[in-house]
Image 1: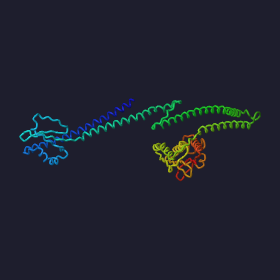
Image 2 (image 1 turned 60 degrees about the horizontal axis):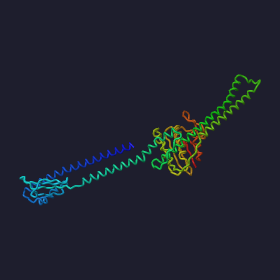
Image 3 (image 1 turned 30 degrees about the vertical axis):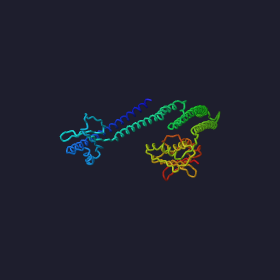
Image 4 (image 1 turned 60 degrees about the vertical axis):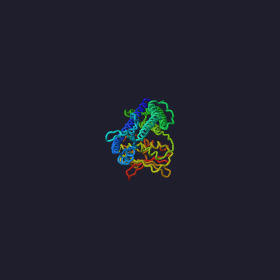
Length: 435
């Protein structure tokens, strides 16, 4: 509540200063107009005194006769009306109440005799209306701004403060409660996404725990399975080395070799089982099929990689000439594209990476091209094998399972991966094709 009160206090001070400045400006403008009017009144009154002293004894006729000349001379500074009040009409002391825009001056003859009084009126209510209108506008703006600040506090700041600690909770607490669903237009989708993230993290934790348990069981089983044939091989090797089996008694060298080979077969079988188990764990992918436009995938790719490529000074482009409706797993496809782009960054020469997404003859093709060292034609059939790395991978970190996982994901989506050389342009192309 304190931040809201502070905000109201700041807004009130700002608009109070604005209102004060507006009134000061209006007052200064009125003072300037009043000063100009006083100068004009003094001149006209001096001229009127001179004319009445010359014998023109009818003040009203004198004023009417010289009115046009005065208006021509003084223009906008001319009073709206001039009223003459003869002095002989007042037997009592002269007292009057005038408006702020009326000036009363005494009219005397050249000998100093008081002839009467002249009332110069400047009825100009416009500054008053301007001041009132400006004040009302400032107050309305203050009310609207305060209402907008209150609405923002209720609809945005308060819900946001309730959500600030939730990412930390779901990251550190396995059993963190989900956020209550909301129809708030600003945070409804965010809350839904955070709850989905919570589910994904919980599933990931369960999978990690399950895989860790399986890994421990697998390691224990492998250790037990490998221990016996490895011990046998060591014993046979030591016996052969010491000449225990010299052929006169006991098994022959040929039989010993066969027994060693049998133990090696057991170790190779266990190793194959370990590789198969590891391959099954890394390729467990469940697609989430939904409809989306192809340009949504293109925008996602550009959004995730454009800034990174700029920082790395690698020319990068994503082209999507058509925009068909696709029924597939958008984020699964993005993972495949991401693997292609990561390989292009790692093994390319940094002179350019391009992504082309298009549909031709009911086949969706997403291709990533990069310039750099080209794989030999003889190696292309093996690029999607598990733990296989090409001849251009020397000196680069990697495990050789990225394209293997991508191939499994493409198969789950009903597609396939392709790789080809483009010698004419000096590029490698990796593509995923979906029917």
